[in-house]
Length: 168
Image (cartoon, rainbow, N blue to C red; front, side, top):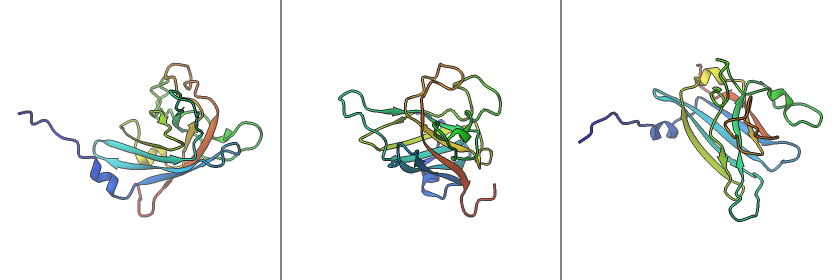
């Protein structure tokens, strides 16, 4: 019998996250809402997202897939034609090539306008991303194109904030 160490991450999701971002859609996608929560564990960070109001394709075999990243900017504001211009580029403190940026995350798979995602990453600590922004793009990241994966327009944004009681 194999007695390899087991990862016990589910209990972390029952606790309080150390940080979270409330997601809001751009002017063209006002129905997008949700949150992304960050749980520090001994094995890494669990990034858990629940988002609703995402665009749907309505075509069989063409469900929407959305790029999902942490960007280095600290503000979801902006003006002009480009949504969330202050989000800046992907969070990339080690100056890695794409898709090895610390802020590169797996895509969100749309399900009738909803998406739920959980990923474990050791590319950053919760404290590292406090004040940064989470961005949802209208196309999936291709994980190849430099510098950011050709994931299209930013359609939703949220600033990552410390949750009550977390001192970092």
